[in-house]
Image (cartoon, rainbow over all chains, first blue to last red; front, side, top):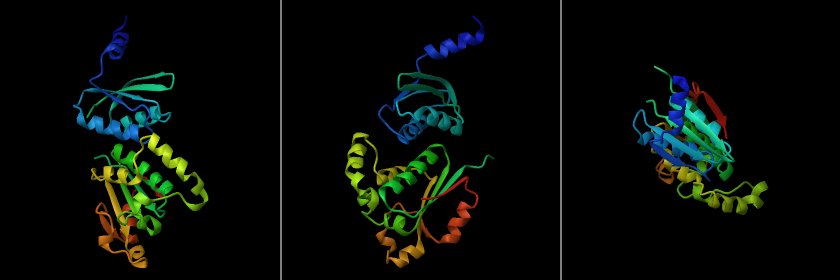
Length: 89
Length: 139
């Protein structure tokens, strides 16, 4: 196993520092609540966002990009998307 | 230094559909660290008078959809336009301007307006703010 695949595996199996459940919330609520949650967190911590608004995947990715944070993973299962964001600043 | 992105909206309508459009965009902009400047004029300005925004309805042509819409909003646990506005006021990136000629036309006084209004300005001031905005919309 290369170093790279090892780190990807560890990201996927490591429990995120914080979680926010945005299921049954619609735009702009997942974005707004994710931002508020990120504000409470320390730099370097990870946030798991769970959402089922069809707009959430693209919106949360755009939010993270605009705020300068890193998307570590995106997992879609049925109609639910789980996004892990690392707070970079 | 990286320039902060900015959205400038002219809110001319006071119906609930248009108010939602304005506050959904503003909520998203502020979440992304953008400045959001909202200039309320005509019926938009009327919605800034105390108690008016809570009574906002759909426009006449869509009145028949209002009851269903309001029931669904409740089921969605969706904030009202005024709740969105108050929430946005916690950020200093969000500014609300009241159009002074509209106030004069309809006899609206400063004390009639909700306390969340930042300032009463004219077109020159708003144009100056909107001149370097990244997104400009008339709602």
